Every structure is written in C-alpha cells, then in structure tokens.
Amino acid sequence: MKANNNFQDFQDLAKREITTFAREHENDDTARLLLSAARYPSVDMAAVVQQIEGRRTAREKWPSLLECPDFLYPPRLNREQASSETTALHKASICHLRFNSLQQHGEVATRPLRIADLTGGMGIDTFAMAGWKAASSLEAEVDYVEQDPELCTLAQNNAKALGLDNVRVHCGDSLEWLRRQDHRFDLIFVDPARRDKQGRKVAAFEDCTPDIVAHRDLLLSKGKELLVKASPMIDISLAASQLRDISDIYVIAVQGECKEVLFRCGKHDASPLIHCHHLHHGEVDDYVFTRDDEAQAHATYASEMGKYLYEPHAALMKAGPFKMLSQTEEVAKLSRNTHLYTSNHFIPRFPGRIFSLLAEIKPTRREVQKWITDGKAHVVARNYPVTAADLQKQLGLKEGGDLFVIATTLGTRPCAFVAERV
Image (spheres, rainbow, N blue to C red):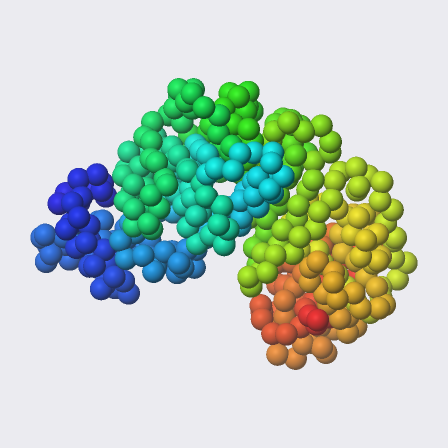
C-alpha cells in the first residue's frame, strides 16, 4: 500500500491489517514506528499512525468508538474539528425530541426524519443523528455531504462499521448538491468550517465556510428547519439578528467549559428561547429564558458578602441571564459587572458552582499562607484588576488542593476570599 494516508484504495483485508496493527501497537511511540517502517514493508505505517493517534483521541473524545474495531479515523485536523461524542449525542437528542413532539401532535408525518448534514467532516454528528448510541427510537434517514473524497470514503466505511444503513454519503459541494434535491428536508444541519485561508480560527458566520448568512434563503427553501452549529466565541445577539427567524438557541457546556452554540431557524415570530445546557457526569442542567425575560427581570445587588458565593456554569456565563438568575434563584448579584452571586442561606439548586466562604483576606502571600499552608489552591478571578493566572503567580500558589482563592469586585470594592467548594 502507498503511505499517503489515503484510504480510497483500501480493500477489506488491507483495512483489517491496518486496524489490527494499530490496536496491537496502540501504546508504541508513533515517531519510532514511522522510522521503523522499513521493517514492515507490507504495512502502510503512516495510515497505522493515523489510526493509533485517532484511537488515543477517542479515549477521551469518542470512547464508544473504541468498541468498533473497524472504525477508521481521519487526519488530525478533522479529528480536532469534530464534535465530541457527548455533544454529538446531545445535539441528536435535541433534534429527536423536537420531531418526536411534532409527530405526536400531528404537525409532521409519522415517517423517518429526512436530515441532511451539509458539513459531514468526520461524521460524528451524522452518525449520532442517524441513531448511533441513541436513546430515542425515532427513525431518521441522513444524507452526509462532504467535498473531501478521503473523508467521504471514511464515512462510508464507518457508517457500515457502526451498522448505520440509513446514512447516504455524497461527495461534492454541499450547496450545489442541495440545489439539486427535489424534496424538502425536515432538518438541515450545518457546522461551518471555522478557519480562514491561513488556517487561523474565526468565529463570525461571514468568515466561515460555507457562509450561512449569504446562503440562508437557499438553506431554508430546502429545509423546514435549519440547525447551525457556531463557535463558542460567537456573538449570540449578532448571530441571531443575522440568521433571523430563530426559534431556539442552545448554549452547550460540558464539564464547566462552553463547547457549542446552536441556532435553530424556521418560521418563528416570537423572541427565541435560549436553552443553557450544562452536561456533566451524565446529567443535563437546563435553564431556559428569553431576551425579553432578561430585559424585564430585576436583580438584587449585595451590599455585603453572605456566607455563600455562587458562580453560574459556563453556558449561563455565555448566554447572560444575569438579572434572571438573581430573581429566579433568590441570590444577590455582587455588582452590575460582576456575574457572581451571594446569599446567607444555602441555595442548593443554583445552576453552577457553590462555595462556602471561609474568610475575606488581603491578596498577599503572607495573608494567603495563613490559610493555605501547603501552597496549593485554585484561583478564580471575576471582574478583578488582575487575571487568575497572574494572581496565582503573585500569591506563589500552585494549582491543586481543596481550597479556592476567589478575587472579585463587590459593588465597586475589589476583594478576595478563601473558600471551599460545597
């Protein structure tokens, strides 16, 4: 086989040799394997290394794929750009629950959903929407569209390996392919490439490929609903105004980090629902609001710090229902620009991290050492003149331990506290 990372000419035997060799040498040094390629003349060592590195990524990002011995992993950049198993399955559950509800109310025909993924890539989102690892029994027929021939070949192999006979793979320009379709899809999913020609990361829709805003009318003429995945750095208000007719916005955080923002477009006149989803340890925290709700909410502001400090989870921090949180969770906001909250009584339902404050301190090494004798603590800085990283250096602390140093602003006064997580 040619060592060119191109799987188009693989026969079943060759694929089996590659995947078997990769599993047997999964813990080997890949650089040494490449240098030792001459010892294995019948093995495409570059392809083996690609599979080894893919399996290593899968341990954290797609653990269930390790159960599928015939799954073939794409090059590194495509792996980096692919959704995680957690977020892909969550997106699929959002779509399936939505259409299951519509079918139950007779708003759509009771038949398999017709879904088009116009930015197929590694195919994780396609596979999830087609039913891979799905908890829903809703059936779907999914068209995967991708212009990279290698990725298309891998997608065909992987759909078969996962037992998904309801995935159709199409190689070519996705917008041209869409124009040729003579039916309307129930859902079109698009995850635009967020890198410019120089390979730099971008966030705004107009800088991505394809340009969703420029082709919005085509997309909605061919799909009853459009689901757009955006960068976690996207300006939500600007993006919603560009796309228009937004019914739902999903801000998805995993284990404390904002990972995705999704926009659902279709015929809709009201203010869109903003769903803040925090995925952690198999659970989903869901906080829903609208911009109108936030505009009309009344926050309570703290004049002094209570016994407990509350930090909203990452999806809430991105979406910004800051006055709503004070009102609905019955906690006082530290200041207009400090998105932390406090109370004297414990609010266990608060959607985020909760800290018990042990003491207010001066942010000096001498003061900190009275409380943190082993030199280890987690440092948090919110609306504070110094970043968390710089403050950690100033205080001579190493990351770790059970205690936190939290630096923030109460009203207009900078302050710092030693705290422990509840």
